[in-house]
Every structure is written in structure tokens, then in C-alpha cells.
Image 1 (cartoon, helix red, strand yellow):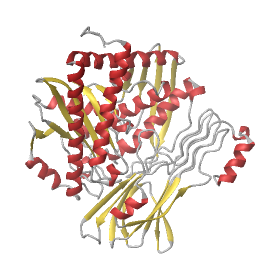
Image 2 (image 1 turned 45 degrees about the vertical axis):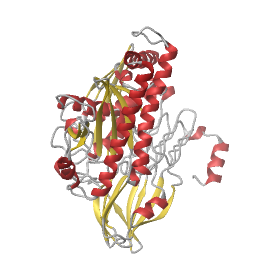
Image 3 (image 1 turned 90 degrees about the vertical axis):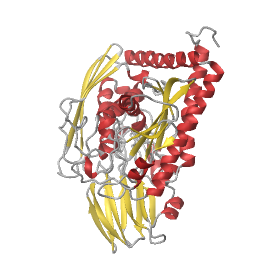
Image 4 (image 1 turned 90 degrees about the horizontal axis):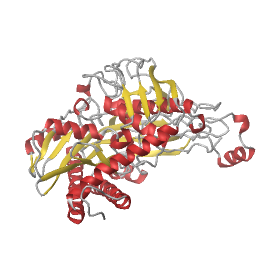
Length: 544
């Protein structure tokens, strides 16, 4: 280790970078381990990160991209809203118009003090399976204002100086359908922050404050240099791309998202001018979500091995017109912006980059998180229940590989809920869980297959909300590849199949089955160039 307190040598920097990243990973593991809800414990729908005192992300756990790129905006919002931090403070927030992304994603921000000096923050974000609103699961696909989506929490102390604000807690729990589960998950988030604070303080004791602070600054600069170098290797120029969301859940009209990407030397400008104005339905995205999706797409395209932190994004300039579907204003509903619009933002940014560097292009992945929430009263316990699920689908084909079958892609990185855990926790029965043959877009390289998951309601009644896309406009292929298959939502009642829209809510009765059938990924290259052995293998595996 360098003895100069203002310098960190390259070897020590790499060691400390991994040490800080390990802290973020341990925070997230602790959150998952102590959580109550299957959505966090089984699906791992949560993220954790370490920040400096200015709110710049230094390191993140390997978790959910749509969370992580937006979390710095939450930390900065907390900094701006709190006059002074003290040891033991924990700020809670979920308001998309005050640093959040959408209401189910609850963020904790906690200061880290070493010898009475604020040296940084730890933060985590977890998707809570219910935060109130008009439908169980807080996932209504037909809301027209954010007040219908659930409880809004601006940045505020939930713990102050280590003391719990019981009044605030009771207000939160009074507005949700499953208060015991929510309190358990909130405590898990607190535990995640606590382990992060402890580990950073231990690291400071080992190496000293000045070395750690220098390392934090150096990590940001290192990622900045690497990102700029990778950008400089890309072809110079600009390209435009456009794709659409199927609809907003209110009007059955496509919603265009347009982007112009310009590369000049070591910088990238991303301009969403021309994108649709914000809409009535819940697919609007706040700026933090748009930035998160853009950052993810550029880093994935340029070099996914660049250490992910705020330094990566210094070379990226984003223009998102205020009042558009990618930079919505209050009181626009936004629950689907974080879930569905973020995926389409990735599609258009990658599409534009693929025009500039065709050899790196990738066909569109399934382009939807296929969100489903079901809630009601569990007849086994007499208590309310809510389940939230996202469904995997087909990955887009690349220049040398087929797309991956049945996988979460881009802005989501969650797992599925295991059938055993789902059926134990909820009055539901999984009837089918399988890949959808023939759904990958054809090409020299085939798109990944979508999947099908059918669940039967065992409660007398329940409400099911679904927020999906790519049911009308399929995931695109590239370089002559064919698009992936559309997804489908179906209600099966008394043996009869009834198609459901991409977004909406219905009442389920005992014995009803809801079937979510997810899109396939787009294909790459002309199908006539596909290797005959690959076709035979697909036929043998039942993929065609």
C-alpha cells in the first residue's frame, strides 16, 4: 500500500475496488437472506450500492440494472432533502418525482460516518409486492395518475439517530395490503444498510480514511478513462432509431420512442427528441429511469467489463424532453415506465449503436418484463396476499450466437419464483411452465425462445393485474433476421381461452387460470445462411 495519503497505486486500487464491490454484494446478500417476501427472498428483486459523500456511485452489487443506474438520483435527492445527517440515520423514499423510479421500488439511504466524518452513503432498493393503490400488487395497467398507483414517500427519516420513527412506519403500514410482509422487508433493507456501514468502517480502520477516499475518487476516474477509450474506438458519426410501445393501457395506440445517438471522439450524446409526449396510462418514465436504461445500453455495447459506477457515465450526455414519455411530469402514472419503457429505451439505444457498429449489433430481446400481480384473501389463513412476478423470455440473437431461451434480459436481472415456494406461499397452482417452441426469430442465428407460465387461482376470488408489452409489435431482428414471436396473455375459464390485453386487470374466480406467454428474441442474419446442423439440433430439441 502506498504511504502517500494522496495517492493509491494501481495494484492497491484494484484490491480496494474489489473490496468495495464485495461490500455491496454482501449488503445485497444480507438483504435477501433476511427478507420476508418471496419477491425478494426467491426472485432477488433488490439492489445495493456504495456511494461517496457527493452521491456518486462507487460500487454496486450484481443485481438489477434498472435499479442501479437510477439509484444515484435517490441518494442525491436524500442529500438535497436532509439538512444534516447523523450516525444511525436511514432515509426512506419511493416517490418517482423525488428521486425514485416507481412506487413499488422502496429505497433506503444511510450515511456512513467514520470518526464523526461523513465519508459516504450506502443504499439499497427493493421491490415491495404491494405499496397500496387501486389494485393488489400496486401494478395496475390502467391508471391515469400516480395517486392511483400507491403511497408516495418523499425522502424522509425512517430512523433518525438510530431511533425508529414509529409514526411514519405506522402510516406506511396502514396504506398497504400486506403490512407484516412489508415491515419484514423494510427491516431487511435496514439490515443490508447496517452491514454495509459496518464493513466500510472496518475497511477504514485497516487502511485509513484518506486512502479509502482517494481510492473512491480513483475508481471513478478509472472507469471514466476506460469508457472514453472504448467510445473512441467506435465509429464516429450519428444514427437514429425508432421503436414503439404497444400502447399505454388506456388508448390502443402505439407510442413511439425515438433516439439519435452521436459519437464524437470520446463522448456519446443521446437525444430522445421526437419521442411521444407523456401519455395518460402508466408507461411514462421519469428521467432517472431513462438515464439508467441509457447507461446500461451504452456500457453493455462498449465494454461490459468496465467497473460500473458513476465514472462510467461522465462521457454520456442525455437529452430527454421534459413532459415526454421518457421524462414525465407529475401527476403522470409511471409504474410501467420503470418496467416496460425502460426495456424499449434499451432497444432503441442498442438499435442506433448497432447501425454505427453493425458487427456488434444484437437483435431485440423479448422487450417486456411480463409483469403480473395477483392479490386477494388466502382462504388458508384468512389474510390478504399479494404476489408479484416477472416472466423471462427470449434473448436476441448476436453475430455469432443464438439467443438464450427463457431468460430475463436487459433492465431486469431477477430470478423466477420457484413453483414450490409459490404454491406454498399463495393460493395458486402452477399448471404449466415451459418454453414456447418456434418463438425465436429465425436467422443465421436464432432468437431465444419465450416461455409460458400458467397459474390457477385457488382463492374464491382474486384480482390479477398485468403490465406487458410486445403483444402487438414484435422484437426486431437485425441484419436480415426475423422478429421474435409476439407474447400473449390469456384467461382460461371453464376450459375456454379468452385473450387478454397487454395491460389491464381482471377478477379471477376459483379455478380460473391466467396464462402469460412471453415473446421470443429477434433473429440475426438471413435464415438461409443458418447451418443445417443447427436446424437439425433445434428440431431434435423441440425448439421449432
